[in-house]
Length: 91
Image: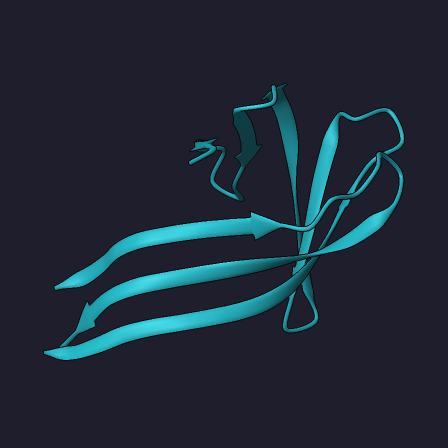
């Protein structure tokens, strides 16, 4: 039970500009399958240091720790001071 797969598909963009991405989620919740695609907006700061994602009118930001042609590593600190790190790899 739960989310078994979450993928982001980013449309090409440049630092300092916005773009569109798709968040594709799969899994199950209480026995019901989840197969959902959300369209979200993203932007990368002009210095390439920050990723902002807007979904349903709410924007979250993360520090870009590493970005290569095959991987994206981001981190943020929540309101309790916990550091959250996410690594995304290109398929």
